[in-house]
Length: 326
Ligand code: TRP
Image (cartoon, rainbow, N blue to C red; front, top):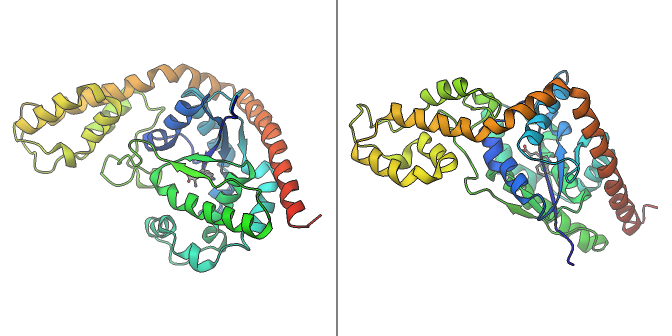
């Protein structure tokens, strides 16, 4: 029997997940679980690239992990662990930081976009190294497949370059990982920009049906469809993108009826909100249970850290050996 390929993917713990996190990454992690050997990282060090306040990190971690597990990550199969609890991340990050130029890191489009979104006029040294830490995350577990949203692809590209460089200089230790994008790799927010907590345009996995409906009602649709019977342009409508993701079956009908003017935005939005809520309704009980039993979550994470730590130490031993740092 051939060995399963290893998946390594993670998210920064910023609290409850939104649909962009779900569609871009989590849904894919769950789908691929079983076919691959999944490892899921809580990128709590990466949070520090854009904020110094650490008071909410643990709480946000628990909220995020509750969503992961409620949506189908099985922690018995797939270890879930914090970067900050496995010291090898810091160690490998340092070694990798010698294998990439600052010019290469400054060209990173995701970094440029983040700097713009957050109005940053100068860059923290550790933030420039964001993808170097991410490379350590992936390669410490010899991740071969990295299912992430589109914005993360440049980081995996840097990871590939670092892995090749390391292997050439010191010996074949690392696989060359591949990005795996979701079908809709970038779900728009209610306003059409990227869905993001800091832009206040999200729908959350944990939102109640009423909250989902209220939010979808304020989503921006086709600006040229003003009256109910005006012919619409689904290709520019955010709600139509949500239908594609959460209501695939009705998409041809909705497209035709929007274009002909038979379907108005209010009815279309109500239908869409219902389909979104229906998708997540089965996960609510599990999520609530976990959030009310935080010790279960902490046990799951501690167990993941034990299993991940073992893999990380083995990789670092191999790294030290080929680098003659014994
Ligand atoms: N940068 C990723 C994000 O913001 C989180 C992350 C950190 C990650 N390390 C990773 C994703 C390793 C995949 C693999 O979503």
